Length: 374
Image (cartoon, rainbow, N blue to C red):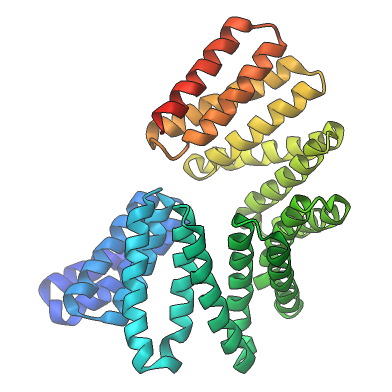
């Protein structure tokens, strides 16, 4: 893609009227590839250039799509206010066009509203986020009734996001109903196209288990977690480059389920597997997977300490804190809460080991970081 973009750039310099739009198309594709590789700064630069071209050329539908991509890139970098501004501009473009041509752009508008809901939620504006996803889910529902093959996937995704927004507002029974609908829809899609929708099914199952746990329906929650782990394990065997990360996520989730029930022995094996997988992933792509490894190490340290393996727990905790310090130094503010949580756990482990001076230092560092963020 880099070579193609370079070629388009040379052609656009010579014949802008013929090749500028093609260059923008290439930059869109380049941004997607870079984003998938977690090279987020480069991905943002590419999509911003595409936005600039489409804006200059006055191509509104293409501009709306690129603004949506720009919003996604900004959100990954933690620039949430800018991400919201970009998606709101895209929404305005698609609303104007959909008002005149509803059959053509309603699906695009629904997708924009789905993403807008994520942007608003990132800023804590949960009521507005709920309104956006309710509108998106309504559009997808109507579209899926007419053309299920085309729009059921969008409806399933919107229902899952709707569940997240309802959960954030404490409306858990409604959230459970929404995620159950999402999971059922993904199951039906996976029965026909397993390669395309098994992963989404597993993700919806994990969300279903989360809500059941919040409703204190613990025995009902565990089978959904275990099914998600099985699905991701099967997918990881066939496509390790794509699904080892989600497998580790599901294993970590399973471990936390047991740890929260004070069943640390059952939590240990999935945690150890999650840490091992994430170490391998970090070796290949540190920027993408270091935060995940730090999270697993934090949980691992707590689990080991609870099982009486305190020195091993301290080592895992120290490694987690070290990673979060590095991440927070590189991207200030983005990992602040994670670092504070890891330091707090580290201080507790130090206290259990009788290392009171170091424990006080860890508490002091956590408090300082927390106050600086207010």
